Length: 109
Image 1: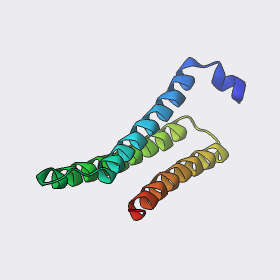
Image 2: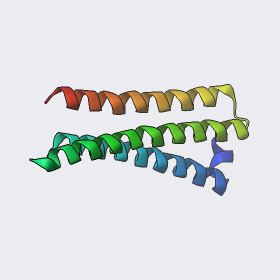
Image 3: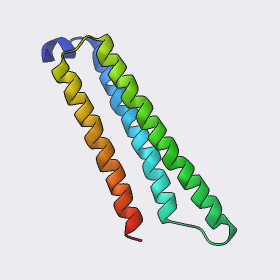
Image 4: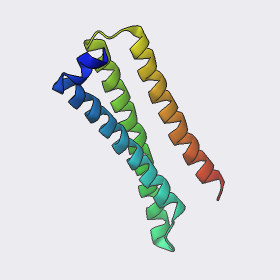
């Protein structure tokens, strides 16, 4: 299985594209958290809150799109249930970690 994956350029590209997209979704959410934790003063305070909320929501939406796209690609590749389970667990752990870190940061203020 590993040899078959590593010898197919399209599969390797798809894997790295998927990981890159997960990173972009996570960074978008994290940027929203950073803006939330570093508020401006005066009128810009509310603008910062609105933009940080929008960034966090966008990060969640992007993460959902990436996960659903990954599941679709796994179904199209006709992979075994074992690999589908591994992919779902990795996505779930990533999501739990990302949102738990956000909750911890938000509650520490």
